[in-house]
Amino acid sequence: MAYIPLDESIPGIRSLLAYFPAIEPAMKGLMQTMMRQDRGLNKGERELIAAWVSHHNHCTACENIHGAVASHLLGWDEADYAKVDERKGRWITQVGGAAGPRPASDLEWEKSDF
Amino acid sequence: MPHIPLPEGIPGIRSLALQYPESGKYLYELVQILLRHESPLSEAERELIAAYVSYLNECEFCCKSHAAASRYLFADASGTVDLALHDYRSAPISDKLKSLLSIAGKVQADARTVTEEDVALARSFGAVDRDIHDTVLIAATFCMFNRYVDGLATLTPEDSQVYAEMGERMATKGYVVPEQK
Figure (spheres, rainbow over the protein chains, first blue to last red):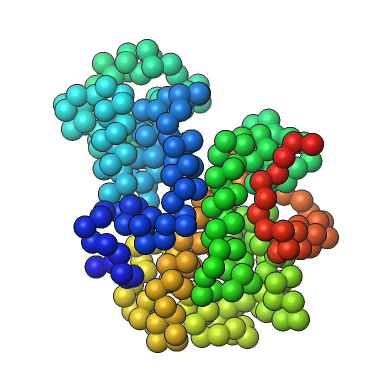
């Protein structure tokens, strides 16, 4: 049960935006700017970073949603997705390590490493 | 020295908003609503929550600037801010604000540790839904700001006078996204 009266038919962050709509334009604008551009990091990599941070914050709902979106955008199939959990650490090292962001073609190549 | 090229001599979040105006615009909009929109919490109290969370995150720039804004807004009671940052439990603030700072501290450390008892205690001191909501939102958002500012090693001024002027500007003009001169 939520600590404040939220609409229980709406999940997670969306229920909070519905409770406090004043924040909605800024929050959605920020998310859109951060997550839906391909300059530098592509959309799939951005979602993977979001899922990875959510994992460290033990926020299962955010991790699952952003992990699923990342998986979709990175072109993973179900078998890849099943391995996300155990391989995630290595993945993020490869994707965002010292060499910095890589082109999508590299990602495709790394995907075959699964 | 910042980890990425940022406008020289510009501190903290301002340097990031100048270099990356697309996201800067929304970040300033966000903080303006959090700290200046109508709320059962006063602007001074909300700045104190922001400063307290930044203090716990050891984000010197955010802590000093928001503490300065809070001092300006508390006016005659400006000493309250430093007493609260040092030990809010013994500071001359309401029990309601103490219980909300306790919740803010838990959000900073691990938001999952906020309990029904914490919320019930705040309510017993008169906190309403919006007090609790705004406290958690401010605490969570400032964790983001703190990490954004420190993760890129932005400039942190050392001169306390710089923060006093910053605090006055934040208190009187609100959060206006900086523009390249």
